[in-house]
Length: 266
Image (tube, rainbow, N blue to C red; front, top):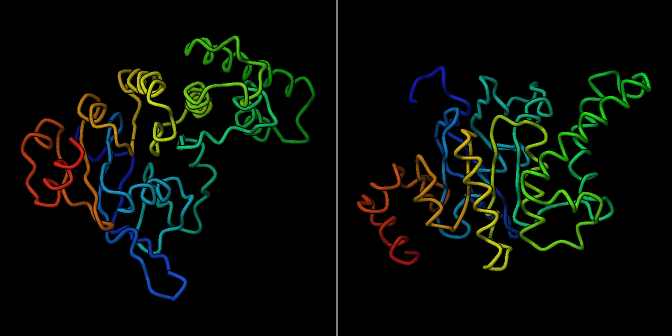
């Protein structure tokens, strides 16, 4: 796995600094270096406020880094000349709070981005009516197949407010999959769910992992991390403190900060 040709994301000296109201700087990311390979499942753990979510949001360019580089498919996303939107098409993102549009049905939520993108590539407002119709039909078929995959085909025409938290999150995941991304980023996808709904979301994520999807997951679910991850990254104070394969990481942590954290969560 560890050859240069197989690198999907290469993060170099990534820094993100926020300022408090009093002007004092907060270093959310303080010189992070890491490489994520195609097909790799990376789980990021650490205490609240350690920079995990900021790291993910930088990978998707939802946060602009203060300094450093994020090479995705060989192009630096931190370079202002790079077309971020072109790369975002290949980066699926799943949040804690689902972020479904409440005024659109489930299938409309899933179809929105791929229809927009494909229509834009076909000429946008100048695309022929039959082309637009064909695009919508193809995207709808994909959306229905994805809903069928998670057993929610019967929810296609309902609004998100009628769904359970677990159903909303699974739909948020397949909405990202509808774009056929190269990597999926998950920011604590189960933290807003009732305990009995966590399993159905984790099961879908395990399916994706087994199918070879490249995944970067911020989570507190240590059982999931142990079972699915190729590599665990432990962050604290904006830095990567330790990383390694799950068995070695959980059974034989090297750093005192890691040992202290694991003692609290295991």
